[in-house]
Length: 67
View 1: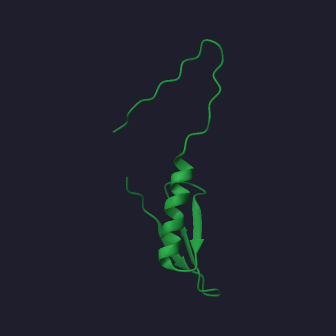
View 2: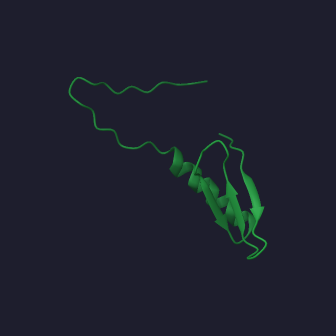
């Protein structure tokens, strides 16, 4: 799966900030562009990881495929 990310250099530190516009709050950083990209890959993976769900009596959990 591909995601768009935006990279930006911090002029004060020279570090790279990176975020994914489609995933609000999914941000990361790194000392190099490569490190920032590696870090945002991990951040996206964690962002998309489902939270555990506790079902009430009578509720049924199903998964659906979209697209």
